[in-house]
Image 1 (cartoon, rainbow, N blue to C red):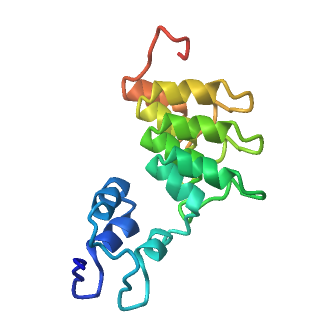
Image 2: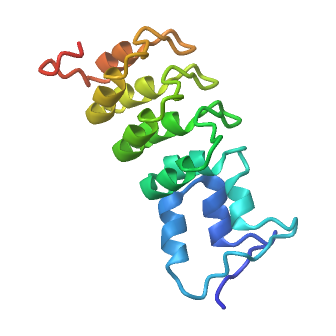
Length: 176
């Protein structure tokens, strides 16, 4: 088994999981000799460390763009799609921030979704998508009837002002 641990007993998988580096976690898990259940000095596994920011499985799967896992989680009754982690992020905010349109679309299909939820910086899924020029995500959110395009983050910026500031205004699509 090839799973070397550092001084405090952390493996590369633990470090990647703790920091939310999904693509690195994917690569590490492809190696057949990696032990995903190994524990550090505190008894934490990589899965426990992935939950270090009070992120649910839905939030983690959305952040990583795992649409099939998001679908599976949403099949369970009483799943709270609007739960926030310690930074105030929801599954929708993180999926929008990472540019995962399939996950965003799936989350928007849940009747209980709150599109206007703000994180601790006052940012919404629309603000994240606008600043990063994810036009397909912006379009999906803007077609959601409950969206409030005038929400400001803690600096007073809206989705439109951030998109304009970053030069991401597409004059051809009517979102100016």
